[in-house]
Image (cartoon, rainbow, N blue to C red; front, top):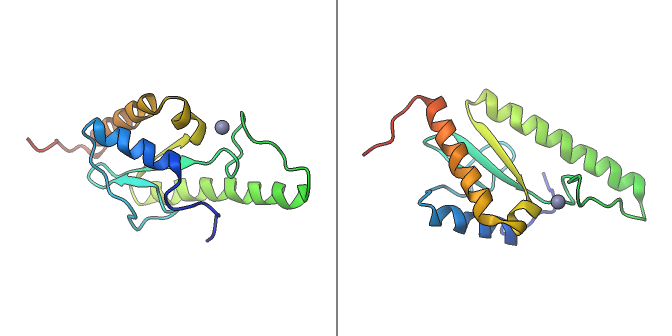
Length: 132
Ligand SMILES: [Zn+2]
């Protein structure tokens, strides 16, 4: 399913680097519904960085002036897909964390800390102990 998002857009890379700097270790291109940007398989947490335009961020989404109907239905499909993906992941026992591209741009360290907290929460959910 094409969503016209590059596999390695800037905010995703920045967030991954900030997470790595916090000592978080994740996997890329993990085969899961919705193609998460990166995942923590041990904790079953999937992270998505949502583009402000494609996912209709309330702060930055500007309705394009031309082909308004086309873009409105495209946005609606993307949002529906996000909901379906979260549900599919949940059914597989995975949690989902979605962050906005603009949050990464504004304060990547703060977002990385949210990822870290979500990993810890998912770890508790999984009822597993960290090795070591
Ligand atoms: Zn935004």
